[in-house]
Every structure is written in structure tokens, then in C-alpha cells.
Length: 146
Image (cartoon, one colour):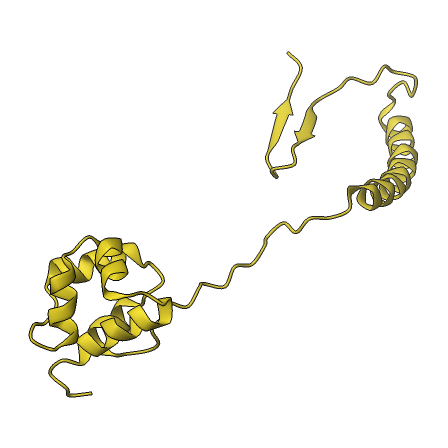
């Protein structure tokens, strides 16, 4: 669009999309009502200060569109992918217990074999090496006995 006052038309489009009168728009962005009237009548072009106020007030307005007429009037929201979706913990716990039980049985048999091979006492007391606590915000803490 090569129109000298194309930006004024885009400002007017923002006002229409948001259902704002000249007065409401002027109050929202913090300018005089007369400056809005002059812009819409194509007597003036918007100042840098005016544009900054508009873009700060209406964060959903795309600056490239407002200044150059490129893309669309509304910013596209970035796609958000949830890295850790909410899971029904009761199912996870029960499945984990099954896996842990199978793993435990395997490790016990392997540990017994290793103790026999290495000559260790199979009745030796077990010592806790570390405890890991997982929180709902996906963080964790590791505790190691002194």
C-alpha cells in the first residue's frame, strides 16, 4: 500500500476492531482527543511517541502490521508445548511399583550372584546411599546421609 496515510487507516482499524470511540482510544493510550481526530482526518501522521503508547497499551497489535502493513493486525501467539503434561499420579505409582518390583527381583538375584562370586556376606545390613524427593513443580532434591 503506497498511501501516504495508510498508517492512519490501520490505527482506525485497531479502534474499530476494539470497538473504541476517539475519546476512549485517546484516554486508553494517554493522548489528546484532538490528536486522534487529526489522525483520522489525515491532517497529521502519528508521532513515534503516539505509536509507542499505542503498542504498549495494546500488546496484541503487531508492530510490523501497524508500521508497514505487513502480516496481520493481531500478533500470532507462540505455540506452547507442555513439557511435563499432567498425569494421573495413581496410575503412575501403580505402574512404577510393578516395574520396581520386577527390577527389585532381578537385582536381588543378580546381587546374590555377585555376593557369592565376590565372597560378600548376603546377610549384610543395607545402607541408604541417597533419597530423592520429587515435587509437583517438577523439581527435586537429593539427600545423602552424612
